[in-house]
Length: 388
Image 1 (cartoon, rainbow, N blue to C red):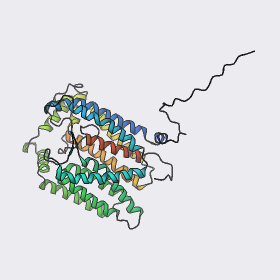
Image 2: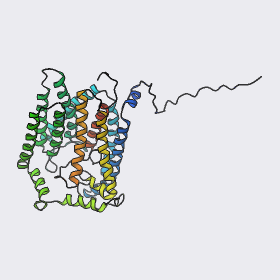
Image 3: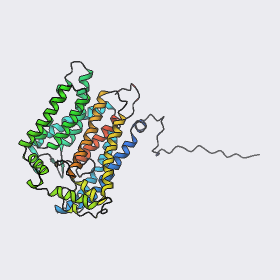
Image 4: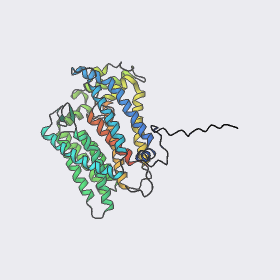
């Protein structure tokens, strides 16, 4: 008589994070349709930002007499919030992304109006509303949601006969632009207007409107130069450094020079101790001094990769709204990063703009997470003819 041992099949580990292509759950569908490579690049960018905040935060805290890790701790509070927002928004279907953007645009536009009344002035601008120990910058959230709302208007104008989508979009641009200039925040106005113009062009803008928008853009820049003192001063100092204070730019360029190819090493930077905005507008200079040209190139490569990768995901997209919304959001991220890095390198006048996911600032961190989450949601793979 022979004995045979029968073994029971091993049950699947319920905690396993792996998904099969047959998994029709919400997370399973998300996992196989989202761009996981793009998601990884976003995670890497957040990681680089955390490292640079740990380098730039303590000297900034020392200058205001705060605890050593005051800015580091505050920024790290927003990292899990941002990560959750990226993942949560990326799960949404296209229709829900549009609805979310419309609701948030309405809320933060009202808060943008409120900054003209209840905001306290900081460095000559009224951009923040205080909520206890934190300050909210509504314009950071208006920026990505406005891109989605205007994409909806432009696409509806093409798909629905008689719908005044273009006129509504122009009106919204005038309202948002007027509110931003009133703060004043000319740099943010330029980004929002640039994204809006790129969407208008992609939506089939006629040659007449192209020429008209270029003329209005040039006229607006000239008007800002003559009517806004801080814009006038920054442009004059850029064109002729002898006409004004160039302290921050000089220190920023000194940081890049000191860093060279490989940098002075983590925590070894000295220029950041003398650079007032080293943890915000000039954090790219901190990267240059402590980690050298190699990390600066990595940061540039990460932003370029995110924009190119996102654009490639849209190659076969046939829905105009998705094309315009995702294209506008990608343009916004690229333009903001370009302005920040170019300002640090004295290639353009300083704009007081954060580097997405890297500069200190809760509003910037969370709004960039919202933007990236919407990009991931809009670029997810969908079956042909799948309802939006």
